[in-house]
Image: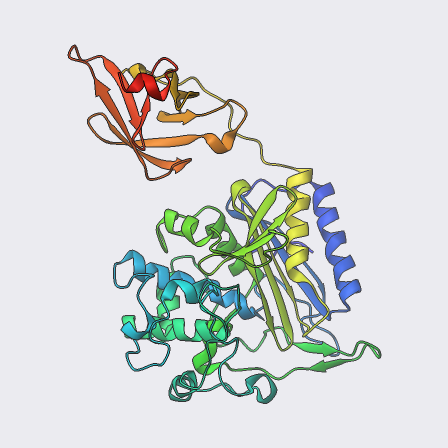
Length: 456
């Protein structure tokens, strides 16, 4: 169950005991699901730290096991790649998320639906493209797909509720093609796959791919499923990938750099726009990525389902740990839950240790701002961390912290945490000493003052 030589890296290895527990969980899942094969990988600190493969990628005599380079159809995890392509165009200012569909398809009956709502499954557009493609397994080409869009319904008001829409992601793929002048796959390859080194990912699988099966729930027999070529609907679920490639992808989602989009763009994509379960508040959806809460931890990722294949991607971005799980069966497996289990097991058993604290270097420019201040009758403390200006409302509440970036003489912008985006202004007395601060226009003073005192 070890990773193949093409993906094993110099990352700090997991202990033998933890690797054994991950392997045991994988074996137990494969048996409980009665899946022909289950493959998984765990990413920590930007590298594939462990991978495992149970059962068979291809049944036969002899059966063929999977390895880190065996391709599986990842289904709707493809949507995250479509979303990244769209956001890369946004970062290049070639579109905005508030652009309506009519900007690109001016004669469509759904011209007023904006990109942002389609990315978040908040548009209310019907779930599937017109036609019974999940019975025929014949997906439309571009002309037939766009013709079907004019028959499609908006089944709910916009932002009325989370309503998953494969149709919306097919339309997002069309937007990518219209803006770039490229086929969707070419645009995704250029913008996402090649920068991340995902050389085994694409719409056309290799001859050695894992075969997909439906297992009879009573007889336990396996029937090979046909390959579903998605044509114009590929942006909603058509990519094939591997444990090795998806480990690179999970590492990027956990710790993004500028290879695909700006790091802050990934942060934006991984913030919830709409709740997927408004009663329990344990799930949400952002710009192409889903969020799930388990206990105090929030994960991002996506699930995928296609005839013969189920996929789960989960990333705990705060800790830099992620997991990918593939099962080559149509139903019965829960790879998203297992991926979450694997990440939890790593975090609970061998959590990454933070860097030791080191004394700060001198910052005479910030010294007059540091220490205890008061605003709205409550304390606010300014301090230096890692060479940057921060504030907090209380010592025990990390959610009340704010990080600032200098934006000019005596002006700082809140760039992280509470009141992000607001301005902190420094006001000086005639002698140049700091007299008071204004944060988001609220007065911040060295003494606790009432609002009445500020009027005098």
